[in-house]
Length: 150
Picture 1 (spheres, rainbow, N blue to C red):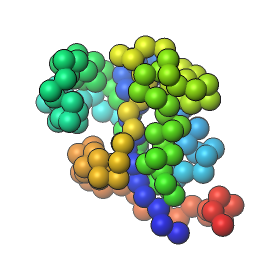
Picture 2 (cartoon, helix red, strand yellow):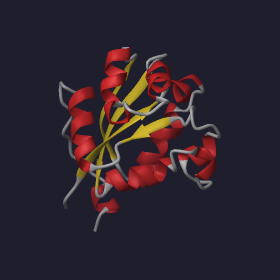
Picture 3 (cartoon, helix red, strand yellow):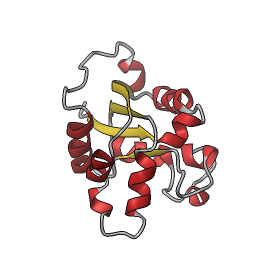
Picture 4 (tube, rainbow, N blue to C red):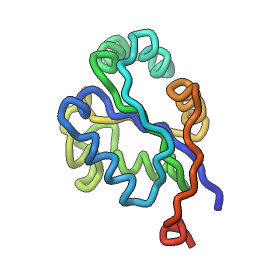
């Protein structure tokens, strides 16, 4: 089975609102494997590095301020097509365009407070995981994988 890994972060608004367990639960119930988990308060420098691809946008400074305003929960999820599927589970960046059933569609209504971040490509995931988990993540065997994958 070819698997991949993705970086998912619960932003300060999601942490403040007590949504960490709900978000983890959705990924676990889908069948994905959690291989990295930690809470961190990003510095402005680290937030700017994380969102470097948006540095030319007018909203960049506000995004950096918000992302570094409190604790975030950093996660590494593993599984088949987890980068693309993880983004679908999160919903659209603009929560008002997100379908009910997605994380943003169920828990968020404002673009500036859209609960979480998910890697948008395998390449971005590789960069983000190296940045947020320089110590690496946990490799372990999930014994119920035969109930998730054919």
